[in-house]
Image (tube, rainbow, N blue to C red; front, side):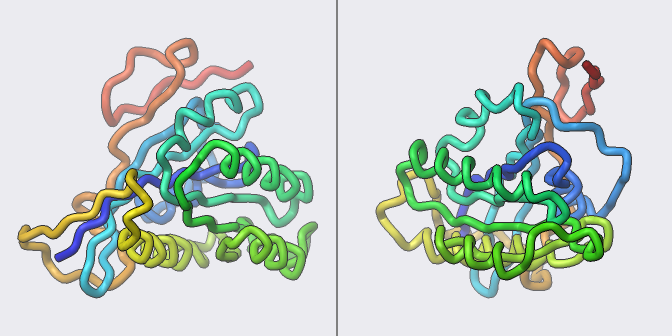
Length: 226
């Protein structure tokens, strides 16, 4: 079996639902009481394709402006990015353009981009049309999808599409940061695109020392408000 190890970064403004989206996919759960991410959270999951396994390192970044300067530390050597906005917030959509410019300026290797319009369950409050978003996605060479972390809608397709494109990208010798190899390890057959539960876990939470208590792998840190 071919194995591809890739880094994916989740970017977007505060409150658009980045953490809810990732936790819904990897942990198959949803909570209305998720605290704002401080620094970044790190998750891992494996996605099975027909003849390959994609091992993703998912970096869920903080959307608060005061952490913006830390972003390069998390998207450095990333192979894919989920650019998440809230369909009810025109400002969150506009901010995506800044993230794209930053990635284009600082990430030299080819990247798989996905524009994700979250909170599509709030259709009655929509501020960004599907047409506007899909046209922008096409202009930057990104896939476009709308999701609802609340209703678990569209999220599987986002990660499956990303994994499929990463598998294609792994055939290129131009991407040094994308690791690919053949494995003889026995793996049970799982439905295509579904993360394997035994390894699809929240493996750690990375936060700024000034804003967290003593860090231990896998433990949730104490958040502070200001």
